[in-house]
Length: 199
Image (cartoon, rainbow, N blue to C red; front, side, top):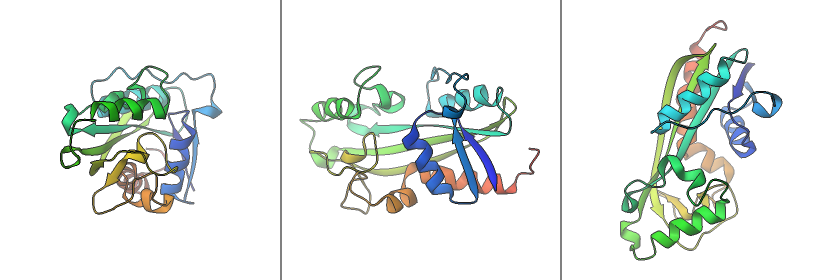
């Protein structure tokens, strides 16, 4: 059994990572360590933010720590919301507020030009030092109105390539096989298996 700490207090994200990794991994997050603050996401890219979070938390915790930064990039909006995905409509915006703002900005953009992608970068750290980063991307389109109640974030308005359903409509086991986070996690899980316990 491999033990892993995820540098987040986002329960949805932690559950998703646990499901993707499976029973060979025991995943905890910062909810178990209330004294440790989450690092500020001051980077300019998903990769920079993931590294900041992973190295900061791993400098205060034993064992391996992983952090991800992920979000939605919409071509018609110049790649927005990007690293601001979680707070697109404001610092404490709800998922609905973020979706509403995004759809309002795309109101005059035809579906054929609503190409987008979810991008995830995962950073793996130990003892305050970065071990590696891994990236996963899934291409798709933005749809309106939102569909489905599964997932979180922008899932109800994103239809991945080769599917007709949104991430919000797809069964969790399907999403967890094809998502940006799943693709990045598969890469880093392979690296974890190869690492020695002391690494």
